[in-house]
Amino acid sequence: MTVLSFDEDGVDVVYEGTEFRLEKSLIEEAIEKSYPDVTDHEVLKIVEKNPSLSGEPRRIADILR
Image (cartoon, rainbow, N blue to C red; front, side):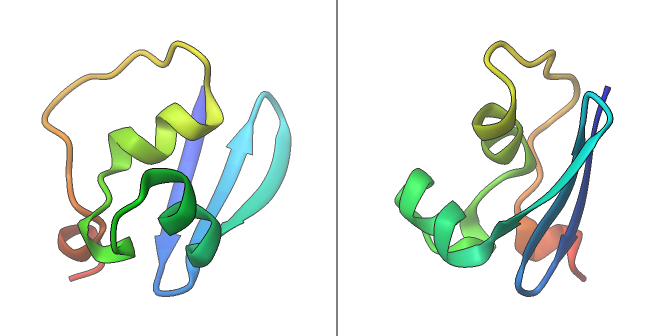
């Protein structure tokens, strides 16, 4: 299971027991969108090759409210 924790500057990730951070600039470059407009599903696709996506994607701006 992958855990994503969002904040204004990036995302803390726990993937297969390994913790790391994806900085805002890296996410924007990878997705080619402004950080607030990126969705949780798009971030999950950066971390996992074939993620199990459930529910509606949520924009980071909505998550941080």
